[in-house]
Length: 193
Image 1 (cartoon, helix red, strand yellow):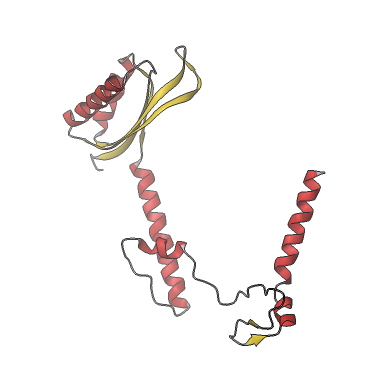
Image 2 (tube, helix red, strand yellow):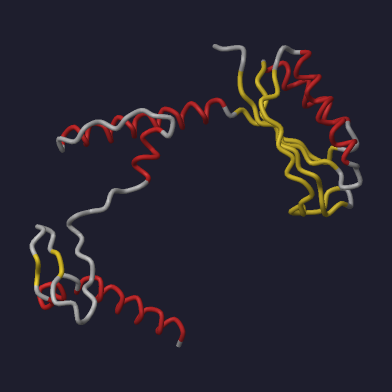
């Protein structure tokens, strides 16, 4: 079992605290983490936000989110010290390395499925570049089987096979889209009544 784990620390500071006091608190958290051999990966100051419910006569708080790497003993000490601080209204420490591992595993499984399906269709595998296969898969290629609607007065329109169709043939290729539009309009009018 690894001794280094990844945690997310969220704490709410009283709105009466100045920017310097919030920075000093962040520095103190970083010092505690370093005492135990951990690191602060990321600090994100969300700023002043409205609380869901009143805490100690405060309706607002300054939210700070930090991502930490370190052992479990660090987390217990950090929680103890945050509990005794008067400026900290609430804090929450969550272990996120399990979730990140699950997300990575799901992404790898999806990538393998996409590669397998591409191979079955006879397409080349996706390259593993800096944008990754998700970037390529997220932007769909134009589908050659879709026929664009033909503007009135246009004598010819391309077909999926590349042949030229007459306006009557092109118009008959798009009734599904028109029917869907009509159904959506009818549903909207029923809601408005």
